[in-house]
Image (spheres, rainbow, N blue to C red):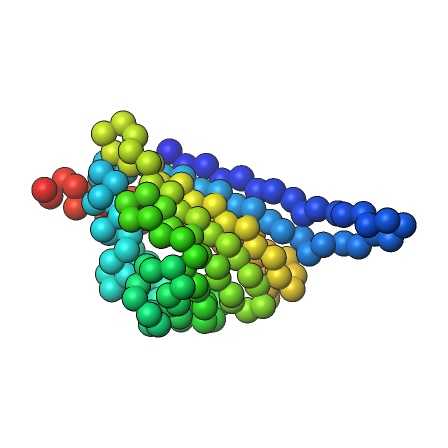
Length: 168
């Protein structure tokens, strides 16, 4: 079960003057896995094994204790554009939710991942909102790039969770 949706930017009036706020785009994605929330969380937070979920990583380096609010992680990605993502963890409730702020290529993103027990498994929901210098990078829509990445990453993550659950 998967779902993607988007939101639109806002325009705000202030007295006789109006100003345009940066366009904020929202993306949502959900999956369901056979794994219970504890197993799902264990796989999600095992960043040393993320290469099993995605081949887009060149390197992942933590500054501070992983998954603790205030800790930072620098992720070098290889595609679709070679870039470095700087991420700071803002909230972390093990086996329930985690949130962070990303900065990459002039874009800022807030993202949440929420795990909920559902139908003898776990529903994993993520949403992110981003804003930045433009709607495209090298002629490719940023929104479509992020949606494709989320779909690929979370489908692979779901498959990994299901494999682990079936092996136990």
